[in-house]
Image (cartoon, rainbow, N blue to C red; front, side):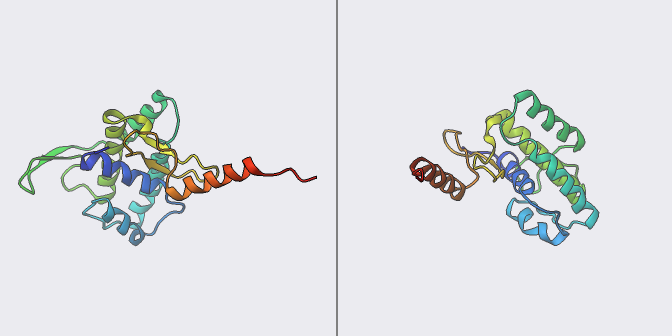
Length: 175
């Protein structure tokens, strides 16, 4: 599955933020933001706290759920991140920026992640916003597999679950 930069990479950023287990310090987000193409990564502590709260809402958009609930959640994110999208020519090629020119980094990240989730839901499949099927994991992911049937966040979770199922199937009752 191929996505454009704002669709796939922004949705993957949403998953990475949602998978974080604890609030961050501003410097702790720089690597994640850089890995997902966010150029302005200079966040203040208050912006970092805002993004932590935002990341909890992003996580609610992943996993099995009724389509109307998922769309309502994404629409709420879009409404709360409303900005002025515009066409940029900064690299010589017209392309869309989802946040206002000069928006602070946290506002840009909110706009991009909300747009990324909406892009996947509308142009790929809402079911591609998955949650790991291994009991006790709960990590979220964007399913970019060819057939769209990915059930685990990683190969490790898939293998661990397969081993658990195998052992449960072959467990001998003790006399």
